[in-house]
Image (tube, rainbow, N blue to C red; front, side, top):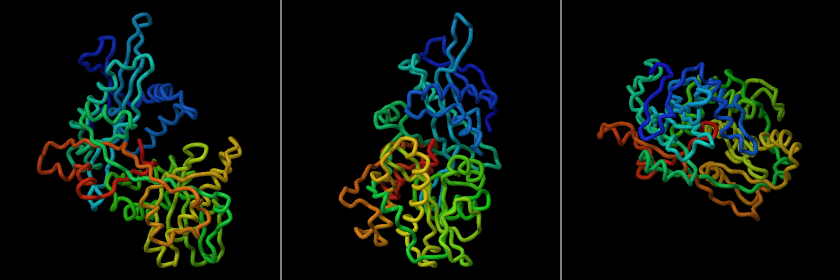
Length: 405
């Protein structure tokens, strides 16, 4: 692995007051504070602890893959961070049982008074260069280097990444489902017994979650993050563990239990995590079901989704609605279109009164995920070309929001 270090690296066509550095772990606190300052304009700005946690919880973290530009003030002779980008080391699925080693670009930001000077472009070029030359530890991967790169861009910036670094976009299909939350809260699992919903317990639940995620997402979708046990235990448990609800079957318990503190064992049938996106919108942040287990216990995908969603929304209502007065009777849910299609195939219909059928279910696709091939081997390129895998091979693209960077 490239050793962590911090030293100036020349930047072409940029004022000599600027210098580029790659960081060491001792620099992370300062870097996290800078990132927080850049996003302070948001209505709910992430604190410095968010960026520090994001880094330290990542089992594949490498501070040398954080690149920053510093500006030296001639009066104080102090050099401060004014721009940043970070490369995330990830394994991503091809949706056909194989996976590739990838570098994700995230936490891109520039201080307000240093924008439009080419700093972000210089950092992007440096990040791409570092991915070409990065060698992972042998115990992490037998592959010699990263094979592709990915990032997520807003619609206004996709052209920038296309022109400056030859990234190409793929489409992730999402839908928006209008909800009648008051009706959803009345519903339960009907005449089903032996099931309960609780928060996931780590590391106890990790083997089951890892197995189901591989079958439900990694083996079906291109771009999906391949999750190791370390990734579940060290990263996801801390990022979404307080909102990850699991649906559990226990043949020895005939009650229906929604006690989130119950850590009883049983067979995990599925899970969900949701997050608030606006006053009216909630988004499915993570989801998975074991279809074989649901069939075995005569539990369909619609019932599983509704049961999990009820508990997840109940937590949000307790947490958010009392604070901001949001009308809980008027919400909409953003979810991957394939999850919705899966429920249509299992009798999701107008009989489901927790959906507001008077309002239109609409598509809101996400064209923001972009890819770049890093391999120079022409024969191997097709194996790493996510754009071709999605557009020509027809494998749908999905990265769960819980894995975003």
